[in-house]
Image (tube, rainbow, N blue to C red):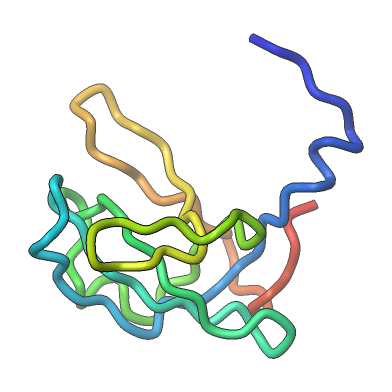
Length: 112
């Protein structure tokens, strides 16, 4: 495991946002959703592709707060441009469990 400094960690913009739209992404190589996430007035709405179809339905995701990295460069995934990375943890079976705040916080709040 490579160690990083506090200054390096501070460069990662981990922010809370609320899922406002979740749609199927049939063109993805692995099952995924296309998400639109509201990160508040300063950052706005960003879209992301998320391979979370095993544990979450589109309906479960609507209104859910998630933690995303909002300062990665845009990544082209097939015909879709992913603008942020939604964070989660891999289970042994490969399913992803979303990283979420324990209580509601304002969209755009930075992970400290």
